[in-house]
Length: 215
Image (cartoon, rainbow, N blue to C red; front, top):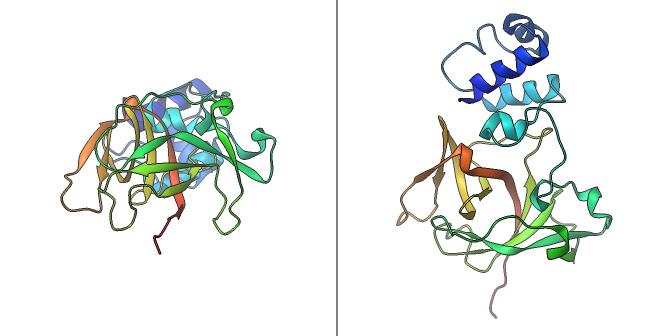
């Protein structure tokens, strides 16, 4: 199913007509029935108008239609950690290359709590990256700060995200590609590739980086 097909299913469950929703939410007339995908602006309007809609399900097809609690550390909100001045460091690396094949599913107990980096905008967790496909923007060994994409936030196409997939974590610039997400590197030696949305467990926006420079 496409994002729009899933959203139409949501509207049917809620008993809301497409035209009625477009008028009440501020979407343009016919935005839901058009073949093209939703824009980031449309997703934002949907998120505001449908606070009970699980955007992870809407965008990737994973999870339940309505909001529910998640066990994956990537999907937890900062206040759930119970430590206002720390954030978890995920004990895995995001591959700045192709899919890594690392194991998935990280619990809070597996994460080291690190002091909050006040210079970086609001973020939910950090993790290290490996590989050189995102060079020169990011180098292998850098630690990135990430903000999870959830029901109150929308995907910023063209920006750098970390994708938690069935084959591991990857860090790329991402673009909508129908039922897939196209992953693009900075390093021209690496070709683009696409990941099926059904294989994506969660997504997070990269909002900062900590680099160690040799003196």
